[in-house]
Image (cartoon, rainbow over all chains, first blue to last red; front, side, top):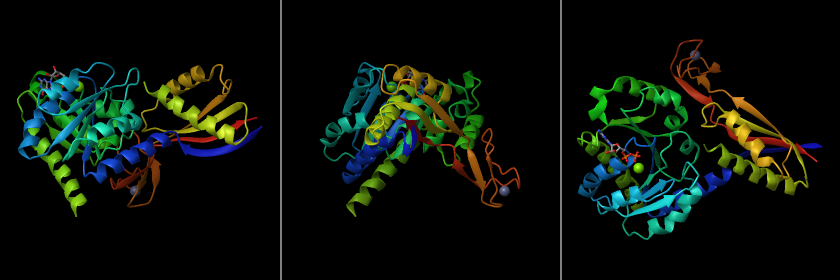
Length: 225
Length: 113
Ligand SMILES: Nc1nc2c(ncn2[C@@H]2O[C@H](COP(=O)(O)OP(=O)(O)O)[C@@H](O)[C@H]2O)c(=O)[nH]1
Ligand SMILES: [Mg+2]
Ligand SMILES: [Zn+2]
């Protein structure tokens, strides 16, 4: 019997494919976001609400929808005139770089795309470990959840660049403390950029959309220089 | 629960390494798992034990080295464990710290014949 040193990242293969995805998207100047949350926090609603603002800023974008099954979310997004591709993961509770690799031919056939929004499977745990090749991971949490969520699911908050606290319209009816939620999120990840939004009233959606639009425009301009 | 997908990724790497090293049976596998990963060591152990039954990995012991979320102070250069995300140096109280460990998810080594 002998011991053999391996020293390899368990997700090395996923990370390689993610890097290739990132490269393919960057060559076309497309900014990619990976939207994650618990089921029902409002990822699809946020995409729907952002559509008008992104169009106002001439950000043409496409959406890849990840779900265990069904194509409900892709249908919802398509109703707004946004191209959407549904990926069903079957039993897997997260998207991985390989699934996104397979969706890239569909994504890249759209001319002039500036932004790709990937809606991950509703799950606060598993997507944290899987790089898809996105430029930023965005966590959505809603005021219908607990304000201690960042402390309970730190991996996803630590892996994210942006946090959207959604359903602020419901905050008065819950014991969710937005100030505390922000504090907890920043404890886990001091670099997190935090937005507050309500897809119901539209509050804050424009600011969030403007932020994403700016990132997409910046990436595109880097490609053109 | 993604510990099953993680298990598949582990066995893929180990299978390749065993073939490359002419190893036919696996006795022990050692992993490094950081505190800030979304991996539950007990769940991973359960998935691993279930997945190796009846395979070339059957009977292998899984050793998981858990790595705490570690910080280093930029003021006094002290190293410490970050508990409850207090992000604060226990020696000098500075909050000017870097995270230096906790996101590991690696295969360290294997043993077999
Ligand atoms: N009150 C309120 N409800 C919302 C808001 N955003 C989404 N919802 C509702 O929350 C439910 C789940 O939203 P959905 O976008 O499907 O969540 P997803 O699973 O994260 O994609 C739907 O019934 C939405 O109408 C919001 O800002 N306020
Ligand atoms: Mg959805
Ligand atoms: Zn110090």
